[in-house]
Structure formats: structure tokens, C-alpha cells
Length: 178
Image (cartoon, rainbow, N blue to C red; front, side, top):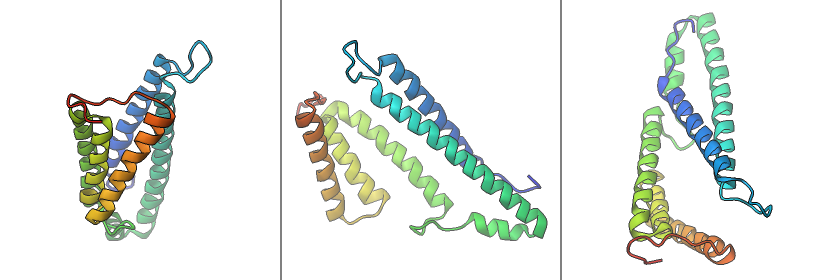
């Protein structure tokens, strides 16, 4: 695009999210979105999540493509690649640059993976509670009080909505704690 460098990382991430979304959609439909009795099937939520991921990745990709074309046209018209370089280092609303945002994304995926593994040991609710606390404290740099209240809120929400209201059997893990 007129000699302007295209950041490959965000495009790769959009592609990964698109593939995961398609996989969730196909898997959810495979499980069945409805039962024979016409009730909600086991695959409804994965299918809905897949549709949301596919739509979000396509929407984000289209917006990024438009912005890159407009940026390339502006750079070509003004012949000022230094301005484009400065725009690439813009800070987000939290004051993070592109490198910090990319690091946060990798850490979030690592924490999610750790929570999945941990759920087999301590159970789903405790693993998700720990995940929320870690994300709030170490990724979002919130105070401990906020992180612990967020974790407690996630635990209560999961227990009350899924365990009590919907009567969904929640995995208790090898330790059988909750």
C-alpha cells in the first residue's frame, strides 16, 4: 500500500479469532442447538459465541482495512511517512502503546489457558474466580480490593445463575471443593 508497512500481528490475530469462531460455530451446531423436545441444546451457546466471534473479527478486519487504506492514501498524498510512524505509536485510552497491548493479549490467553487447566484441579468456579482476580490485578493493574471483589462477584454470579437458578452441574475438579 504505497510503501506503508502493514502490521502483521493484528491481522494474524484477527485470522486466529475468525478460525476459532468458525470452529465454535461448527462445533456448537454439531452438538445441536435444540433438543428433540424443542428445548435449548448443548450447542446453542458455543454456536452463538462462534457467530459473535466471526462477526467481530470480520467487522474489525473491515474497519482496520479501511483505516490502513486511508492512512496509506494520506501518507502518499503528503509524502510524510514520519507522521504515519507517529500514528502507529498512539496510546490507547488506558495509556498503553501497541507493544503493551500485544503483551496484554498474550497474557490474557495464557491466563485463560491456565484457568482451563486449573479447573480440572480445583473446579470451574474457583478457577474462573482466580482468573478474574489475576486479570484484574495483573493485567488491568487494579487494586487488590477491586480484584478480590471482582473475583467474588464472578464466583457468586456463576454459582447463583448456573448452580442455583439453572441447576447446571458445575465441574468440581479433582479436589471437589465447590
